[in-house]
Length: 154
Image (cartoon, rainbow, N blue to C red; front, side, top):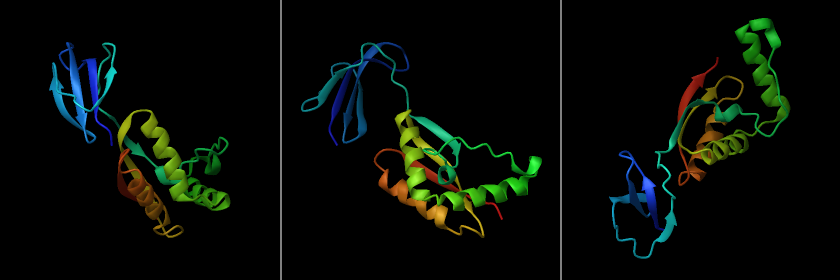
């Protein structure tokens, strides 16, 4: 991971300053930092914000990359909608790792540094969805933190 010195950036007080990043972590914020060996970027007076958090998503059942699907089955009956969702995942042969990777990469590209995903644990899929999302979390550990919350549908 390369080091970076960001110049002419505004943080909490709004005054232009510098941010030094070493080994992927903020090493200093202030004026005239020693950025020896670091790449230098001029922020042009823009504001530095902390990473965004996606606090509630379902990485395992994202249909990102598929045509729009409107789940209007069951006329508002929750169990009918859940059953239809399970059947749809089976019909499409969704790979939870592939789908969660697509979704997580897109979310990270919008500025998220933390994703909390509810993951289906049920009698149909067992732990398949959890294993797929955990594989994605492991592979993207240097890009975004992914937290999982068990979502028992059965």
